[in-house]
Structure formats: C-alpha cells, structure tokens
Image (cartoon, rainbow, N blue to C red; front, side):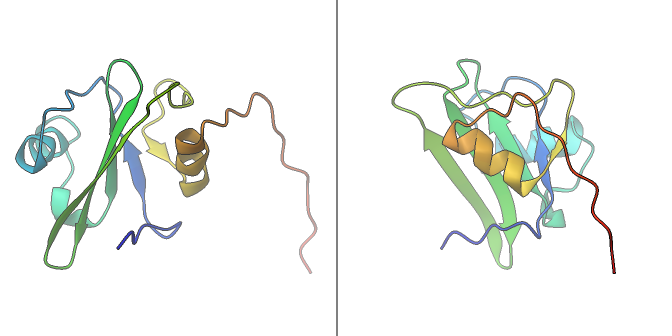
Length: 111
C-alpha cells in the first residue's frame, strides 16, 4: 500500500544516483553521504542521470519500502539546485511533470 503523505519529511539526494542500487546500496548513500539514519522514517528521493527514473526509500514498521517510477516519455520536473529537503507538494508536482516557474504567497490574516 502506498502510505506516503504530507506528514513525512522528503529528502532529495542532490547527486545523480545509479538506479541499479537496491535497499542496501541506497541505505549506504543515506548513511555515508547524507549523514542520516535510514531507519528514521524520512523518505529519501533518488533520481538518475537522464532524469527519467526515480526511487523513494522509506522505512515503515517492519522494514524498508522502495517505490520506483520509470517514465516512458519525458523527464521529471526540476527542483531548485542545492535544495535537499522538499515538500510533499514539490514531490507530487515533480512526479506529475508540473514545473512552477513563478509563484507568490499572498498575505493572509489570522483571526
């Protein structure tokens, strides 16, 4: 069951990833290159050089889950360079191929 939501923290690996890596290889990247704990419950996002394949590594109770998406056409929308932590909405937009070029948040009054 797909159990990811906006309540999770999503971390994008800033380099190109070899998509032949499985659970152990991706956990090694998380531990030694990102300096994080793979069992933390955070979701780690990896993208290949051609920008058409994505893997998400996530620890759920009982074990790791690996989500893998391969695009038949096109590429994933780009995320700002150097940005490691991304939001759920950024991830959804990236997977759906939507790239927001300019946006602004309007000021709202709290009552």
